[in-house]
Length: 258
Image (cartoon, rainbow, N blue to C red):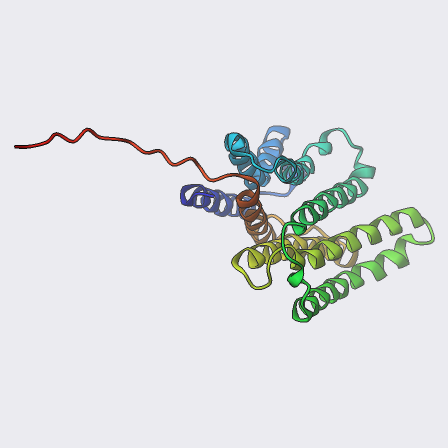
């Protein structure tokens, strides 16, 4: 990604975070104001999709390109189904959307995994992946216990969907450690980007099932971390699926002086 785009992305993320810091609760907004807030909430993903679309003529690996577009689309889709899904099914729809988003991300990572040598599975790398996965499982465990106590008897299906959502997030984070050569620049981008996206899930699950209240920092601090995560994932993946811009050489006629 170009420096200008990254700068624009950073400005948009900061401004939208400030906007959500002072915006009233959703119930206090009109339909038009709520629509505007949802567009602003998805501005980072929409920016990345727009950048990809503009650069589509440079595609060299179409499969990776379209998987990245699908990953970004599922981020935006979380604001679309709000208008045609009943309030009673919004939570389960959100979890399903998250599961699909992470499944696409897993396929995207596996698609890139075959392009690198087998040395990525070194013991130190495995240790970091397992340790991070365990930390995510510990973070999710409080929500899972609360969900089990409240929903398992009355709605076992809902409990298992929540469990599947947590496992999908954790598995995606673990797989991110094996996409690139360990401790390379791209490796750090994918790992920290995926962790940034996954951390928001841990906080949201905790807010819904443990704290039982509105996720206060989801659209401020949480969204900031999530947006940085998306940028890191998108930036690294774009470098793999897009060819470098053609070098334009201009020839100037040189007059011979006597």
